[in-house]
Length: 81
Image 1: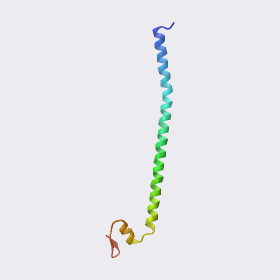
Image 2: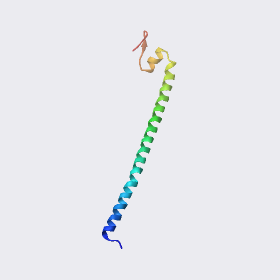
Image 3: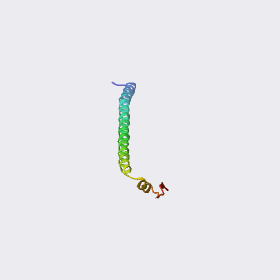
Image 4: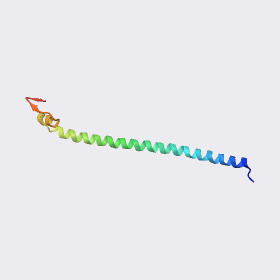
């Protein structure tokens, strides 16, 4: 039959086993979280570049007066004020 010391050893072994099993799971979860964050950052970067390209395409066709007006200025005497 098991004595008190045997039950303590069994419990300590179970706790140690649980800790050893949880360590790699924590690291895997942390790694997956980092990958998800990187993917989100990359997706946002692509969105920003697409917005920038759309803005560049819009601006390319503007003359000086139209660009000045788009920026909120008034084009007079060859200068934007």
